Length: 146
Image (tube, rainbow, N blue to C red):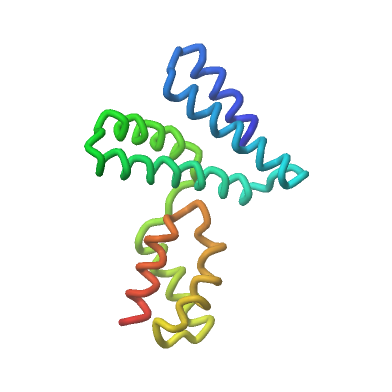
């Protein structure tokens, strides 16, 4: 991801795209900081975790700005989110998520919402970077209640 990020950063700078340049610099710095913290090259999954953390920060900032009536800043955050989404793997469809969750439910013999932790421990590694974990948790609850 770092090589692609560097190439995209250069393109954004040449195009004088300030938002894209700022976001890519921030993401690159976060990835490099994580690499230093880990002390080794980051795996694809570790890179996704950093990317998701950056997305979460901007999503929370968007919500705060909107609730404070600061729509201009919220729009900037939304634009930054769109740039970051370009680096996420293709997102799973609802049906694909349901299939993964149902398979996990069968695997751990879950029968109620109390088994949600067991199901999530099987589902989480399969959907990392491919689905929002909050949405996955809601789907797991719904399927366990059914």
